Image: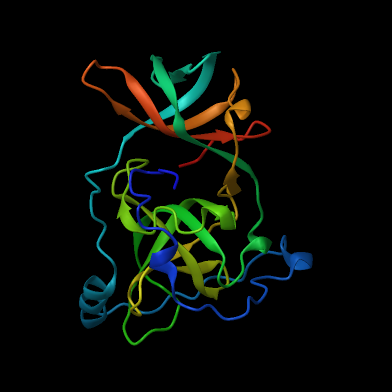
Length: 249
């Protein structure tokens, strides 16, 4: 089993719920049409309290590896060098168990009910338009990944993330859709899901398994790495952007 984001022990067994037959989330022929204004539900103190109670709380995963974002400058055997946005160049070792994942261009038209997805987002002061017994807060995404079935189950859940202040990362299957708001479901109850708005200007990528041959100088990467007692980094996973894509997570 591959290791990704430090918590890949929760895989397919956590997704044993039976999903219905997929339905098209959006007609591809209309994928570029302007979306109608998202319905904004009126606020009230009681609804705010209910939304606080029923919106999932992001937790910090103690097993999460260090996140290294940058561009590959060297590939030499089982060692890569990555230049980060702040100008540092870090040497990172690759092991046989290091998982390599490729990101390619995706489209919102490919989002179906039951498809496994991941998104980094931040909570808005606005209710989700998806109807439930109680109000829940809406999250606005910085990116959306449509995840290949071979990776289905990775990083299942709703956790804190370090892309932006107060950002979260959520992985699960699409359980509901309302215009460009999708419910990412990761647990058995009605509230074990994260409602995420996907604006038209955010990157949408496909995420699939790859091999080390994808890691080349000049490629943009997102690396999850652990630092050993000797101070050296070893990669648990490397996410590589294909065709000039910069991983947005």
